Amino acid sequence: MPDAAPAAAPGAHRDVGIDQGNYQAPQVTLPKGGGAVRGIGEKFSINPLNGTASLTVPIPVSPARSGFGPQLMLSYDSGAGNGPFGVGWSLGLPNITRKTDKGLPTYDDAGESDEFILSGAEDLVPVAMSPPAPDRE
Image 1 (cartoon, rainbow, N blue to C red):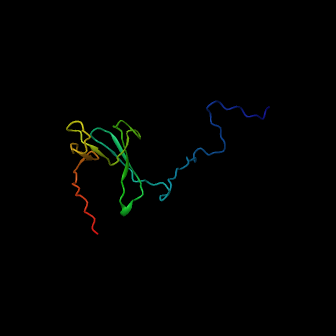
Image 2: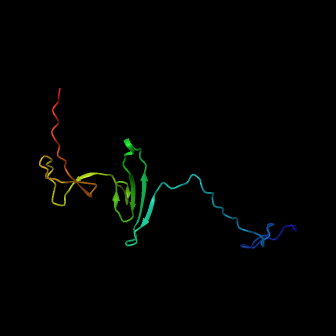
Image 3: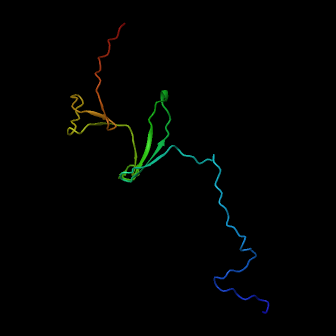
């Protein structure tokens, strides 16, 4: 076969009709703003003292009467251990617990020996209940 072109050596480029001097790589274009992708109010921070990362993601809840409702945040801390939502994740729910820094609680509600705290920070003060007013006819 006298017409056949000689085989190209491995690694050699064949001329396929592209002018090698004017060839440009394709350009990547950024999408225009205002699309469907947007943040949900999450906040990311890094602690400069120990290098741990933290992220808080708000969880939207329906408001109750008068616009009152809990503000729930799913929180991540890279220095935290395993939790109910995975390693480093927690959900800060308001709660009432018995104070234990003065010893074990006695669970005697009538004796008022135990102190209660709200979300681990604030002491709750008991309010004296007055007896109900007698019915008048």
